[in-house]
Image 1 (cartoon, one colour):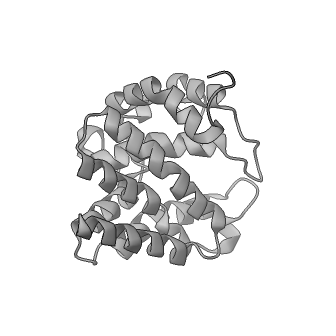
Image 2: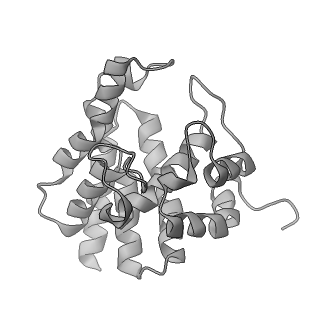
Amino acid sequence: MERSLDIFSVAAGLARLAHANDGETYDHGCRMRPVCNLLATRLGLDGEAIERIGVCAQLHDIGKCTLPETVLFKPGRLTPDEYRQMTEHTSSGHGLLRDFGHPWLDCAADAALHHHERFDGGGYPHGIAGVAIPLPARIIAVADVYDALRSERPYKPALDHEKAVNLILRGDDRTNPSHFDPAVLAAFQHGAPAIRQLYDGPAVGA
């Protein structure tokens, strides 16, 4: 337990340091942590694994600290070269986390590398598919899309909970259920009321 408490402090410090000039990325990781913990709980993971996945969620975008501000904060559509630079945050995050010699940060390094892989093999950086993608990355992938949909961006408004859930479960021209682990997607669907409360608070009259 003492080691776990230490790693929580290390993870929080890394996140704050890396995102000192990018408060939204830091907030994004903080919002995702309880969502990923909830999904991991519904998948039946044990307590330590749940906490470890929470740390992975907090640090999954740490590689964005290496991106040029012109790419990271661009309000409009990225050019092909800018998009290529954006995708490199996965390998950059892996590089930042892989050499600490702690198993939780090794896990976080793998999650940073693979959280944009898709279950159907259409993601990046390596195009791996299915259970070849580490479980923390598969969990983060669902929570990442949900939080992005719920968040306002310079180029889009925030969606409400129901619209975000329906888009993830049904898909559109950018997102498809085939992108996600079916087991994680089921945990997301069943846990959706609790996830809504994490963002919106208890429903009126509840």
